[in-house]
Image (cartoon, one colour):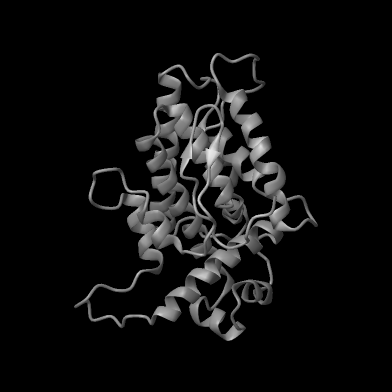
Length: 270
């Protein structure tokens, strides 16, 4: 089963038994997808949704800032989605020509939005982090229990190509950029809250940490070298469900080593 290589929409539901229903994939940008994940009855987007909307939103009226044209906003969203796919396949060194080709724009348009590689990489990471965080928050708020929320969140994270976060582990990546620090803190908090809720309720084994979960998701969402990106979808969700079944409590085996936290991951990449 092949999926479009543009930004896919998140699943609409995820049950503890593993069955899921998806909405048709679209090319909508972070603003539409993330804003839709606000907690029911809140009347306003959550923190992650607000950040994701800001990635491509126009300046507010009266701000004195020029309002970008609608086509410029669409181009920016298409570039971020295309770059995300390219980075998953080829890493953060993916050629700009390839990103422009996938986005259906010219190189000049790409450089107008993102004048250099570090800027593009940073915004792709923000794009993915904000969308995944919004999914985590919505899943925990809307699903009947924490394990069902974890299932929905992780399958959505696969669709969002969370493997695009791997550039954060590469040399020279600016992990201390204020926007990235804020987005990272929000993502970590959402994932740790979800995992703790499942462990406290006795649904998720207690010998794993948020670091274990995020590393597994990143590995599952990256294709094998030399394979086309859509081909990863044929196996990623099947293998993810096997992984999720192994997270259920009570644990049926003893894991080697100790649970990996997000702090562990940060220390290893500094």
